[in-house]
Image 1 (cartoon, rainbow over the protein chains, first blue to last red):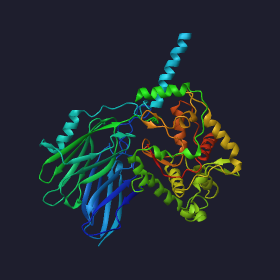
Image 2: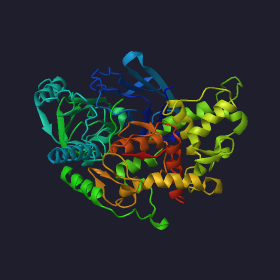
Image 3: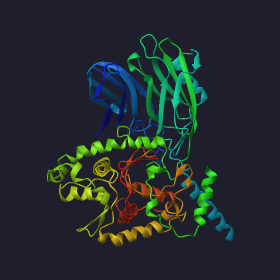
Image 4: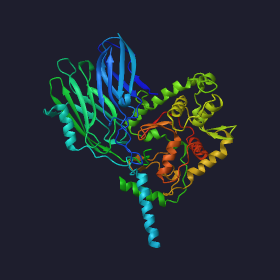
Length: 106
Length: 158
Length: 257
């Protein structure tokens, strides 16, 4: 059960610089922690996040264990055309999640 | 007997005080910190040894952090975002976590504004460094010191 | 900082004054003790990670489960109307059991009795998600817990537990949260211990967690043996704390350091 929370303005004027906020549920286990009995808790993190706007990549991030659990990433882009933002998170143990949001540009 | 009693009380007092102060380590076996050399090497892997100038980049991190497990971080670069002159990427590093990298962010002229925010983990009070790579190949940086306070009554892991 | 903490601990150990209750007009949510950054995280639903659990809870609310093949919606319809204000009355008296149940307990009773499904484990993602989704419908509603007269003896038990010194540090909840809520312990504000935002996202946990988890952590902090999840004593303590916070608005899912 992995949920994502995306905040993209529903509408924008052409040329507006808009902020995009993303929140993805993930424990981001660092791989540096140990249990009380001394065993290493294996690393389990999201390693990569990308956003495409009408098919073109507009933002990408490499994430490391220093990113807090439930990664929150915000960034900006220029509203150029109505369409779709697609988000993709990729990580350890085959983690792969996508989400999308649409925008109307006038 | 009397002496034993007082020794025991002292021990309990110390152990208890430590518990409330949160000094009981969450990580039972703490791995080695990233060293200044590792930080330098992580930075070199981005810059390829090119000169890094101070300026343009701004890091907003609370000067006093409520909990090192979740620290808001905002990085921005005072630079145009035009096809001929823009920020290509921003790289964030730390000094004392088990490894020096925090995140790499890749932008372009379409970004409109070179500003990214996220939340990070800080194992201890330390220096954070952000380096921006511009479209002309130059590198700009900033570093800030962050104080992480000990949380009270922390839970032990698992 | 560490030295200050030790001095405060020794002050608490030696203080023999009985906790004085906080006057109703001075009762403040833990939010008022947080830094602007942490407040901002709580106030913006698209930045509040607790909302990830609320989203999960919304899905679970509509999912048919159990031998009865029923979803929460089949009885309660739209939670936005049916659950508004409900969390502000919990823990509430259960006639069949003859004792108070908290919101998690109520959800599990519904699962077992109405949906004919297995109860969810305490602190499981599913139980936290459903609880968060239900609690979120009462955001901004003033806490009303404890108005049912049948709860009186259970509130009294909870209060007794709150006042009672325990553990190797020989501290009662009251020694910090009634007597010293305006001070700090190590880097943390002590706060008045009003459970206004549960289940809530603690930056320390990097997860949503229940009030029972928080209470158990407090008990470990004073080096006392924590009650098991679901123990009647924990529910009574939750009940007392919620009745003590009467009038303070709910803010689930809150953020705390």
